[in-house]
Length: 270
Length: 286
Image (cartoon, rainbow over the protein chains, first blue to last red):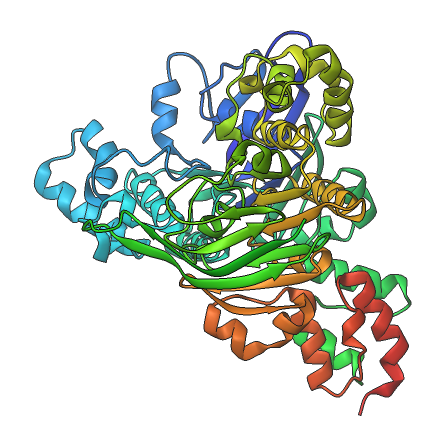
């Protein structure tokens, strides 16, 4: 089953330049997909179209098999959660508890149930000890984890991370990646779409989608995508370090059939 | 232009319940023309430190010498405007400092403030935009219509427009795509070769290894180490103490050395130099 189906999508902000021209893309349910592409390639626009923050001009987008239109957009939005880039812009509550409660309150969840849900999801992202803390006492990674808890509490089918780690330090980035891996374990049917510049994150994904110039340039497993280092370079994209290493060794006549560092080191020292 | 810190302390909100000492006796010297990285955990004092270089913050105690300028506690140094012309600072989120109606006006704001006319500035602005990979069609667009990465490029162009001799860059590549980040750093390296002193605050250890001559390691507002990047990254105990991970290239190199390969590690800065050295030393394993 497909979580997201995009058919012949065409979109432009100002009529002159098309961001997408006849784009089609399928994303299977339960997959963790990483979307890569240079600044201005249309990555964030794609996320905004899927969530109905932008109106579809031509073509169609189906979420869980239902085509997005003006009437059902609010229903569809309930199925999708988004975590944005800037941790400070999306923290709404005065405390961690209030912030996670925000979406639940909007959905008129009863008070006693709400406390239980807040505790449950705060725990899932490792923020249950911080429920009464104010945002000013939290690191960027912690704020993003709270945002994720707020999104998960709404039990979405699809979660989109729109460059959610790009303003974080290495520790914060690591925290978010760990939360994503935990989400994979806990919610097997949940589809995760992560728009990022962090190619190392792409190593963890089931599928990598490379967007360039409003088109899908490559789609496949990390292994299938990162073997194409020359093409990726042409698209101004980086590849994970282990693949750089493996590919460059290969070009120098040393073939590696693994990206496991220990195994590669062993082979080099044989 | 050299930068000297003499036993600098800085305390935020002194004598209040929120009092916090962010710098605790920092001393070092950056020589004219060096490319120096500053690394450390969030909250280790990196941004506080660099804001002293152009007197945006004045030390609570201690002194800073930037060329002929003396920055001391309490009073703004004489000729602070000239100091800021010589030492340009690109903030951590430079897109927050954009405010003009058009990209041109934003980039031209600094030089205009220092008395250059708009006509004189124009060719310079266009050249800078080309250097940073910004389309000239953006000249009359509002900077707020641009994407995050492009906003960042405009903000950097605005600082380069005043042609400072010292460039202080606080996380200049966050939010740029990888190619944009490398292009921007290559540009800083080129400016460095032309004589500018560069101070780069970053969390990207790969860039520190590739671009910096030296690196200052901060922890809890004090300097833990000041050395060449390779020496810092080869020092596992130091890295553990300050909670910093070495670049993957170093980790692979260390595993190879531990497994008996005799690598000339002083020459390794990135994946190509690593593979080059491996080819040279491959027969040398124990």
